[in-house]
Length: 400
Image (cartoon, rainbow, N blue to C red; front, top):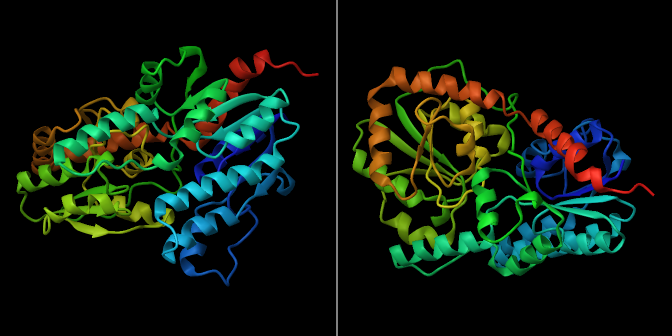
């Protein structure tokens, strides 16, 4: 057992499980979660009990897991009290979690961490001779910066970029890494463009929990278009709003689900009456959202994978996503979904109209989407990660 895994993102529980089941996991350092034999404390507010229910750990020995809770409490609590912005809350969480985690990485041969929370861990582990693996969930920062600067100019809005306050930390992590895990070929291309050697880049697509996300037996009412994710320029919501407005589909609905980026409010205000909005839905309830819909749309400008896409597919939804959404790797255009160019509202309007008018076609596409998603389980993800370790990363490690 030689790998220490550092992540405050719940879906990396599956990676921890895959590494442990293959005899590789030394320690898993994570945020607040529940062991398989635990229940959320009754004294917690319902919101947090529901949230923790979606963060259940695989069957790992309790001594293998170190939970670091306070950074997330501060990240969420201080902005709620008006003491910090959400961006500064994220900055605090990333630095504090990393600082505290660094004291638990001694003795590992490989340190595998999620980008933005591993710089101090990586410095300590590398000084002791460990191999460093940085697991990125986004495209290269320079790619995001360029495309969002273009978008700000197009819409005559101030340029904003989530994570800007800790961008240098991410760049320093990338410099230290011996290997970089990326979730899609789209994301990989952005690192190749920035000069990263191909042999350092390993593509490992994320997965989906088929127990949580599956088709409902009830008929989907009417025609509902659903988007799940942060409402922000980066996700291309502005093009979805325009496409739905232009489609003029009688007795249809556009449902937007997710937190709202304050910088996006001026754009959203232009489409009042075009959409309905739901601020957030716990992971354990998301399948109900997908199963109430007819089609899922994500026209992102920059999206390294998108868990929501494969979750919607697992629920039997046809999906329309942009070529800059990494989950496009999974699709065969026109068979189990549609892949469109970024910023192409007319093409999106055309496809929404087609699916609206052809119920049999959208049901057939949704059925094939479910079959595609069924091959993308989190179990496959964990097993593939372990195989990558055995075939590539561990080959150069000296066990002294």
